[in-house]
Amino acid sequence: MSEKQKLIPSFSVDHTLIVPGIFTSRVDDVGGNIVTTYDVRVTRPNVEPAIDVAAMHSLEHIIATFLRNNAEWKDEVIYWGPMGCLTGFYLILKGSRAPEEIFDLLLSAFRAVKDSETVPGATAENCGNYLMHNLGMAKWYAARFAQYLEDNRGNSAIFEYPKTERLVTDDGQQFYDS
Image (cartoon, rainbow, N blue to C red; front, side, top):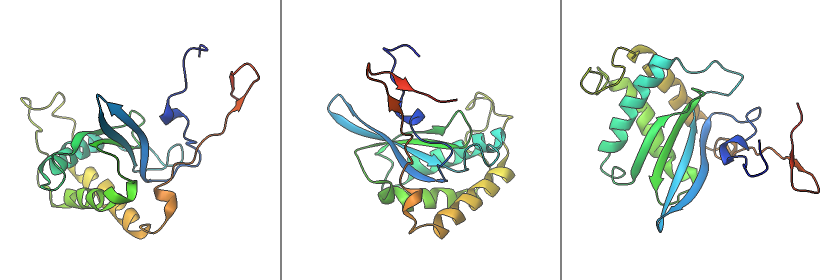
């Protein structure tokens, strides 16, 4: 990493300590408008297996449809999509709210997956990989995460990112051990 490149915020999270939950990843001012990116972590990184890619794709479609059709929140939703590591999703909303304030929205979204009989937009015309869906597994992951959220509603660890502390040398370089 060159000295001009800074470690991006999502890489400063200690992935050995993070648990499933809802976290504020970043808050940005975009042309005078505040937008917040949330890390919706469904599985524990590097401990649990990544989410099945076809199930992840189905969850993306179902929950994006749910969020963009939710009467209270649809005008606030900018983006819902999977993390590259397949352990969760990013949700970008207008404004800045604590993760606890979107808890009920996300709990409802994951619970709504169980009622899906089809995956919205899973046709060749609407999706870039319409054959890569797994509704059954999506329902399993969604039910598991919804139950986890419900069981941990009062646990602050599901709302607070564990941060990696990095030593900084006298000349400003970050120290990484191996």
